View 1 (cartoon, rainbow, N blue to C red):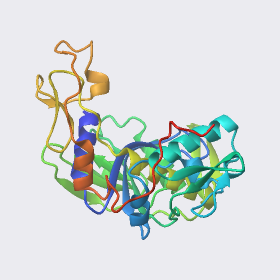
View 2 (cartoon, rainbow, N blue to C red):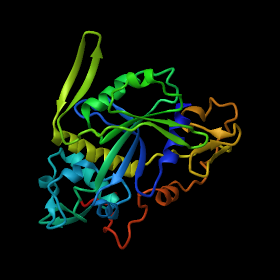
View 3 (cartoon, rainbow, N blue to C red):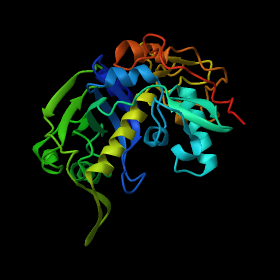
View 4 (cartoon, helix red, strand yellow):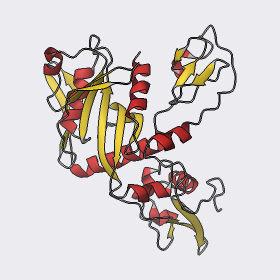
Length: 318
């Protein structure tokens, strides 16, 4: 139920003035400590410049490298990484169009195809999905984590349940609440989220015990780096899964994976395969996921103009 709820919410939240993605890591000092169900990215002033570089995620080490669009820099000087790791990052950055290679004095060098804009990200909103508040699981701890860290500009709980005052009292005041109907796509704002402060230091909750809470202090610079990484991941990833590799597989009009045999949206990774009695192996059906995303959101599938110069990531200079 939660998976279908999440995909329906993603489809309903799509808009030409935002990018929607799902299942993104949001831990800072403790990677993997927090996975955000849905992330909404609103464009900042430099969004068009970022979109013009690539439709895909730009590797974080390439963005952080000492390289720009001017004179080419030797790879060994540009990256503070082991050689194999630096080579892999360069391969990917060239493949997505952010870096280009050349030879300088017998050494491989790289330059950026464009200046990376620091202001392309506007607001980031985290949405935690919990269709049934009767089985909350770790919901309260997850929302406390978001409120204490303040990594996102706002954080929201989305549910299909009727929300009572008792429910609201159990979650931080800063967390907004939506009641969402996955069948109709209607969304009711039960409580508006309060602004968080990504520019201020935050507290990352590492573990909660009855008599003790382990935390880490997170500074503004670390939060800013993580926000950029989340934004890059959101821009490159989106939310639409590939349809089931089954003769019964298909997609809804808005791109959610669907099974014709069971006549409903399905989770291909969990519900489809040898464990399904109706499974009939076949190539995944054609689904224009990129076309839908380009049409319905701020993401740009094909940057306007000539775009950055691209080179194959497989043809590294030796």
